[in-house]
Image 1 (cartoon, rainbow, N blue to C red):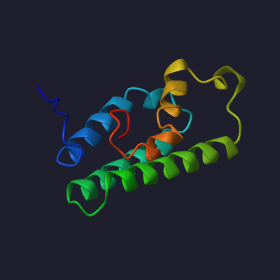
Image 2 (cartoon, rainbow, N blue to C red):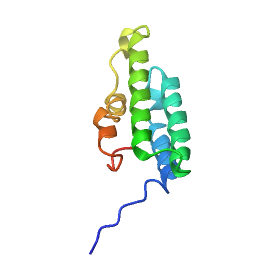
Image 3 (cartoon, one colour):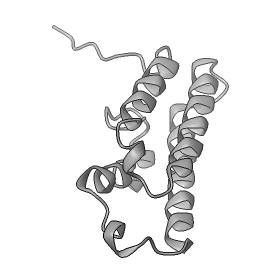
Length: 114
């Protein structure tokens, strides 16, 4: 019996909405929540383009990875947080690591690539 996988193109907007909802849980824990807001805004826009078939899944993954890297660089360049909040929580660390560079190299068909 053949396996059936979700259609990442037809469900791109729905999947992006799900990821955005999930990341809202860690938003209050972030030092710079506006960086997450920027990533999620781009995620939504790219999903709309993918679903409209004006962008490939691979290009979406590459764009998300580029933005994620830029946002991490921006976060690192900002002044350090006060001592009591300088160590990120495990949830924040997990979110930061959730967009691996290799995701864009997987042809965009990995279940972990959004």
